[in-house]
Length: 460
Image (cartoon, rainbow, N blue to C red; front, side, top):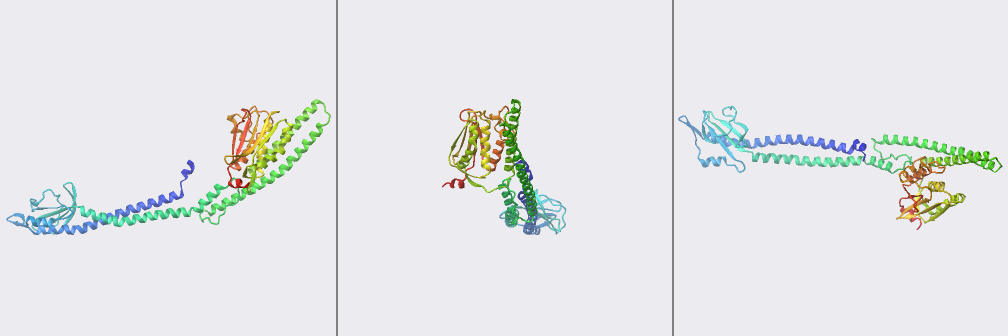
């Protein structure tokens, strides 16, 4: 994924992040409220049981001759303060603050009203405790404190009982939302997959029958754009057809007239000029044909691929190119084996013609050009090898570009032949390999097609 695409983000991710964030906030607020409610419930439940021993201790505290004392046996105190889970302690002080019974370091409460119990939280011996304080009419104050084990356990039990179902509901909601978002975006994914499968030349409208309301306008707008491109492409094809007729006919007529004129007797200077004119006309005709072929490859509509036999394709090319090879005194050989590809029967001959033309154009007199076809490791291929000047390794990628010619290369090429080969190869998802020929000189250009089970089965 590119950096630009990564920066755009994802609708699914944004929706899930928003949903998860919202649920986390809701869970946090719910946990806070539940904890506060659970703490109040635990304090209300256990504060009542904590108040009973405080009242009992206050009732058994006497004042005699100005001296306060606890009128309760030790065993009765232990029974009164017994708790299975928490530690319970107490402190009794007289009106003047003197310790009457119990521990002497329990934190004192704030000002109290006589006869009204006061509950508060404190720290005793390094541990948090819950304390109740009671002051009687005689000035005796009683404090009873207990640790928070059972209170905390009750709070956690309430939290778990309340939050676990909520958490499960949140998880189910996230999964359901994710599944719903993915399902809702499935038509968009199908549209994207259809566009990615298309070749650049397939301009048929996108089927929008199942498109959601949210993306239907986008599909409709894209189909309108495709309609405009189809119309422009049709106009281009009509122009090309007219240009082919308007350019080829005059150039062919001019070529014929020059050939007729050259058959007559002329002084050497005039014949030399006429021969140069004939060469320029031939080059103009060749360039025109190549430009029109390149435009046809680039702008042609997508056609249904057919099973093409490379053996028959190359054999037909031999009949077209052998006369020219003989005229140039070049040994044109063929090594053919049956191999089939799924391809365009109009563009594949155009590709082979440009490969052979390129080889004949740059191979010197008495040279050799070999054309081969077959299959290697199940993959069909076409190969053209020549004994020309060769292509330096540094320029082998550039020769596939338009109008590029290797500096210092002889001949009258236009630099379009191999670019046409590349366009046709790209149409067929084929790979082009350019290497030095087997003899250490010249060039071998091989077009390797992807293996096709349908094409391979056509010969059986």
